[in-house]
Length: 93
Image (cartoon, rainbow, N blue to C red; front, top):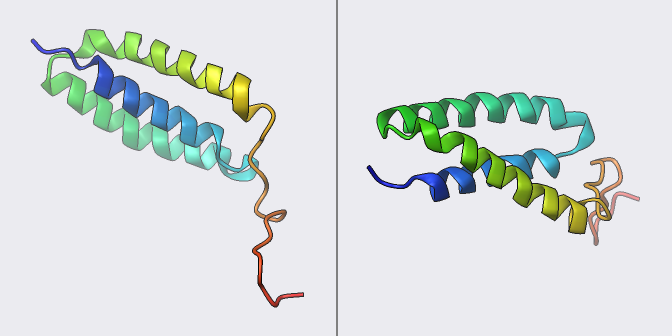
């Protein structure tokens, strides 16, 4: 039996990061989509590799890593709304 904690932790960390950095208006849709896609892929991966016991620790580590990222960077630099984003050199004005 091999250790699958690192790939699972990376997948969960990326998923949490994408949810955390998504726009506030679309966060619910992004969360549902990623929950279905990533949850299904992780369920299939962990079932076929007999790694069901490694999912919970990987989730916990990914949650802690993303909490640290949020505390250090994300809290002070929240994602902007698409209405506030301006593209330089555009002649729309």
